[in-house]
Length: 178
Image (cartoon, rainbow, N blue to C red):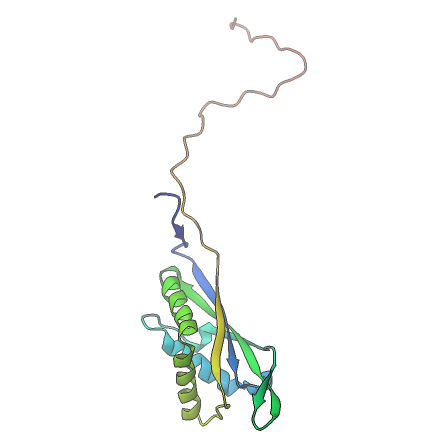
């Protein structure tokens, strides 16, 4: 029905932002520029039917919460992870749904993304941390925000000129008007 479909301005370009947690990295510094490059390449390869470049992906790396993990025999150690917030920039309105669906599929199958990232890191001779895994809920946010489709056309505005503002004293009719 008219007025209920969300839509994007077809002429506008959009940014899609998502966040994921990657375990195995003790600090933000451990997620080096080379690893970030490998991450971008794997991300780009995940999108079929949409052509993306490395320049369209912006990363923000932050420390995730640490937790104690049991390591036999009778040892505990802190397990680290990083949060990767990435923005895919300059996506056409026609590509937004496909990009969003792919980002969500990464969340549904984090093991596949992790395996591809491990392969890319090995191919680049980078150290793959023990226990590296993509986990957590991937949150997707788009910009500009979709709006409601326009409803039926409004009625035509009155064509008569508005009357003059009311004054405190009554006015007389113009000459010739009774």
